[in-house]
Structure formats: structure tokens, C-alpha cells
Image 1: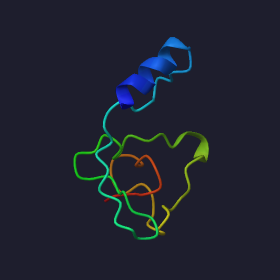
Image 2: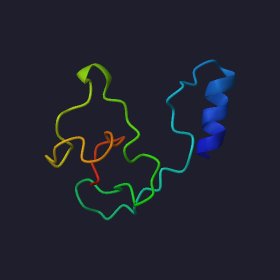
Image 3: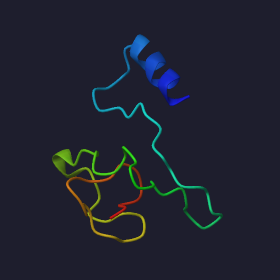
Amino acid sequence: GAHDSCHLRSVRGRHGDHDLCKDPLLGPFTGEEYGMIPRPGSPAIDSGLAAGGLVPAVDILGKSRPQGAGVDRGAYEVR
């Protein structure tokens, strides 16, 4: 699971301070072109780092980022 993966990275010295080691609460894959959007309550929402301008100004669907208190992790900006 996600916890095991984070634990393994930590043991190997590759675990970062900003790694997400929780269930990201992604929605189901709907068969659409993209799919698996974070659901309400997802720890991926508003928890991304926008340091140094490395996050695109828009998500994969063209929605501007951020929509909330911070950028969402992954391809989608939920709010």
C-alpha cells in the first residue's frame, strides 16, 4: 500500500518531507480520457508545492491553479 511504499523509501533514504503517504482518495477511473480525480477530503487537495514556478498555471483540463489555499497535487485542480 501507500504506507509501505513511503516506509520503503524512508528506509532507503529517498523519502521526502513533502511525500504524500496517505490514501489520496482518488475517484474511480471512468474510462474518460483522464479520470481518477481527487474526491472531497483528499489529502492531495491544496497540499502541493508551487515553489519556484514549477507548477503549471493551469491543470490538465485548462482550469487555473490554484483554486483553493494551495495547488492540488497531480494533474487536476479540483475546486
